[in-house]
Amino acid sequence: MKLSLADKLALIYTSAGSMRKTAALAGLTHQQVSRILHKAADNQSLAYYERRDDIKAAVEVAFTLHTDVTRDTARKHGLPFDARIPVFAERLPMLKHRLMVDGRELASGTVEELRDWHARNQPPGKARIVRMLGERVGALHLHWLPDRLRDKWISTSQKTGKYYAASVGSVVNLPAYMKSAAQRITNFMQRGGIKTEQMIKARESLRVLVKDHVKLARVFTPYTTMQKDFPSELITENINDKLQTRHAPAVGEKGTAFADQILLQLDTRKSKDAKPSKARGTTRRSVGSGRKK
Image (cartoon, rainbow, N blue to C red; front, side):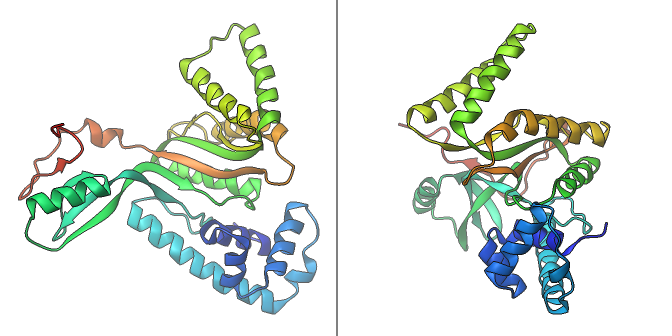
């Protein structure tokens, strides 16, 4: 896949996380990066910047560094990686932490619980507390990624068989989103649909924000299957239909962002069905459970 100058900057942004950090990594000014990305988003010509050999060379160096970081993170987190579309993604941390002693996990819980457990039990060896990674994978800085690259990355991710569901997030104008959602639910009910408990809870949580005069809020599309045997074009079509009907009517003004995050759910069901193996040499316990009050 041939990537344009703006494509590479948009991909670098997925790991840098901000315009200024993207500019710093590429050795460009904030204004240069901003103009390139905004012009690309508005389908304006980038001929001037694409003729600048100094800019192209700087972006190429930064893109190589970004690709290396993205590959290393994917390897560390056990995630698939495609060098043709190096979108930075990582497993998101859980609230729980692990207590590691000489490389062995002895307990899990909150930081406070683990410190208390370590003080009471005083296991020999070098101890450290590490954050536990969950089964959700996040690509959290996709604001400038073109639709075609987002769809292609979703398709290549789905074909790996590593994920079973995907959800896309946007920052929306909450009152506009709620108005659109109310009409959508009315149409759904008129067709014989039934509100689920999950739908009711999600709507109530947003209503609380509206009552608190919150204008901008992050919302996500309902999960779409990512099972490997489904046609990729149907999956991206389903996701884009949800984005256009749910998020698009409530974005466009300052502060909103369309499809700037993707959450993927790792498919660990095969390992869950397998018989657990007995650990050797250590007993792991959850500090927060079974505690006497």
